[in-house]
Image 1: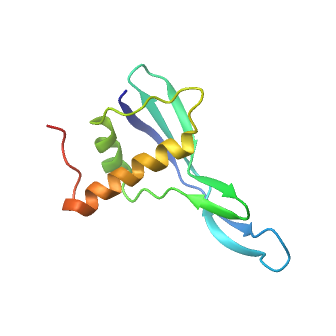
Image 2 (image 1 turned 90 degrees about the vertical axis):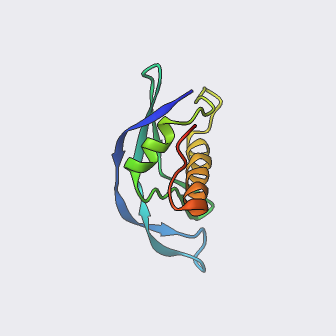
Length: 110
């Protein structure tokens, strides 16, 4: 299935971290989202941050336009009912970043 980014919303906020009095703190967290659309026109909004036992795990995309261009050229697993959207996007962004590190730009599909 092919996807493209149709919307990006950035929303940095200061959030409380930690789970006990000894480890409480604050951090700036990206509470935004990204919306992807598949080739059938189905849109899925994916939040960029998840809370995990007092910490926040965030997906950072340095250039959303380039990421969308990269994504449109890839056949990827479809988002289905059982899919965890944050993990799906996280894996794709990691692959995108690996390609950028390998040669400084994404590789066009041959």
